[in-house]
Length: 39
Image (cartoon, rainbow, N blue to C red; front, side):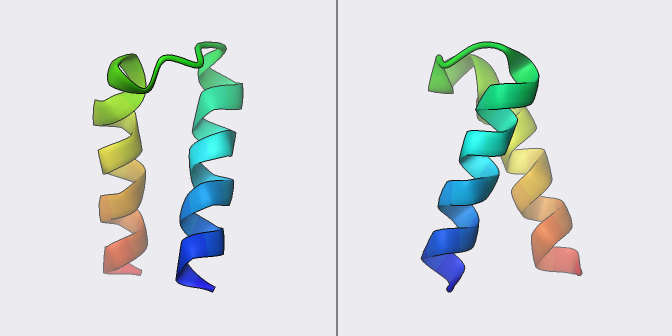
């Protein structure tokens, strides 16, 4: 379930950013993961 969530969240981040480049989204991605780990 965790792996599925991470993949879905990554796809969401790519979609809202309008950019498929992981490096450009890395900081935003880490912010989402930090929020998830706190919840």
